[in-house]
Image (cartoon, rainbow, N blue to C red; front, side):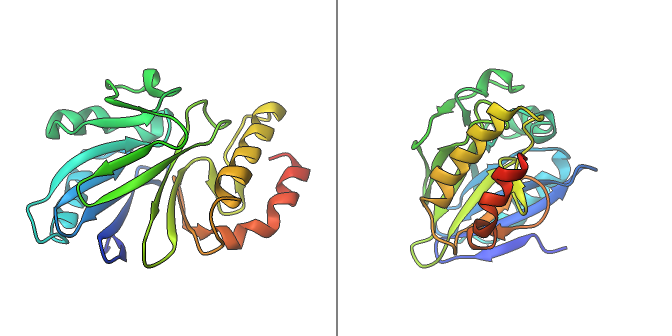
Length: 216
């Protein structure tokens, strides 16, 4: 199956699903410089390495894994992280409040509004509290098109992430998602979740009140 999702002017976005839990692994590759940024080394190192090789063909320069970014600490999103770091030597980034729970040392501890830059493009870190304390969405703003939001397990088609029926965590997550994603980006923004299919903010926006009323 072709992993290519978007062929944008500055970069490509590729994705694969790994494990029985349908974890999405995303790869952004700069077309000119060859820098690659991988989001969530969830599982299956050989398949991730094939994804890197596929992405390398999108660049006119030799490709290199410049950063491994993790959306949150949950085990199903980090099972191949240690192996990938050992295989590539690539630095890592994750939310400051989740960093100590990861199976590797985190080189860059991210807070809300931080910028994550590699040669050729930049992502914004959006801190979304509730699913985990340090969950981060990574946002790439295409200069010629919609924003691409890599939301981890904080936002899906049909609702926000699991908060274990904790009303305080749910309220915090929904408020962060509302204020930091829906209020900050237009309806055209594409949401790439940690599991399953993509959606857009426009498709989900009409349901915010419904989500708050149902409590999950």
